Length: 199
Image (cartoon, rainbow, N blue to C red):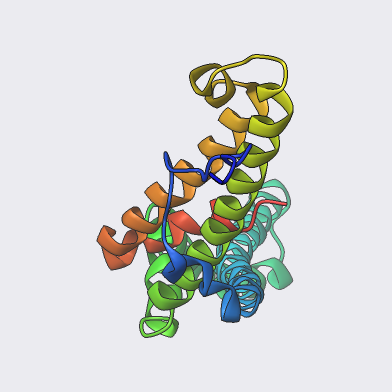
């Protein structure tokens, strides 16, 4: 007696193999680590923002002292202006030096701190999300083949159904992301983190 064919064919169009499905081990830990890195990056960015803000504040104080002196000179204002004008000049130099390079400086500082673990952490997180996306795609394709197959839809129509296409798109998205993380230059690695930290 011949065995009856299975109603649901194995999803052959997309298969990443068991290797990716074992990545779940440290995936969540990697995502947690990325969130910690994101918080540290915010701290570094805030530090440079504070430096620029303080430089502008000192400049403003020096300019205010000069206006006050020009409006109504006094002995006290002479001493105040002598103190603040040099500070204002230094603050102006600091602001000019940092303003155009603050992004690169904060990025360099962040990359120095995480030079060893950034790429491996990004890869673990991306492969974890890829494995999840693959599981979702496999389940959605199997379910759609069973449900839509009973209604007479062929494999081509089933593969183009909205839920299957969306699930497949997520697999493709994380496949591309894994490749991008592997090939990105060190200074551009963090640009890949946003796709992994989306809620």
